[in-house]
Image 1 (cartoon, rainbow, N blue to C red):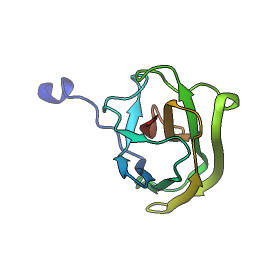
Image 2: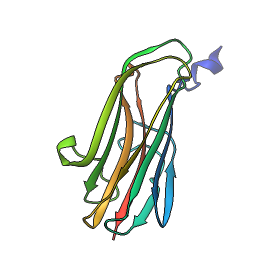
Image 3: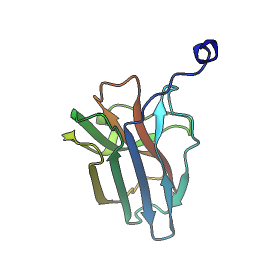
Image 4: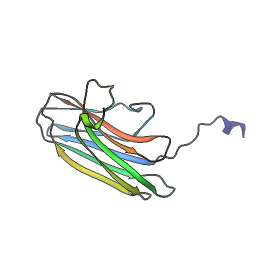
Length: 149
């Protein structure tokens, strides 16, 4: 019994996210991460592209929470210009692409999207998918940096 007192609490994960950014020169893939800490614990993959290249943001999010429905969950996606690699994306008004969908997740349900876009200005961009309003102690996200030359 005393041994269990010192064990870390187990948190059930509620989202599995597969995020990909695809370009003519290659692709980058990122899996689920969580906050805190701000920015997550996994390093962000980086994809180098040319300005104006056709790009595809592709994601699939699976509800891994086994204890019933998660109601009014928001799945938010954005592509935001960032100043440096360690930055977290700013508000949506700064995003070059953003959107969200609100839905009720049954256990093992999925949502996904495939969005074509392009970035015409050189710089560093953060592509991010995140959950909001899961009524949990943490939210899940997935992020990729796109370095536009």
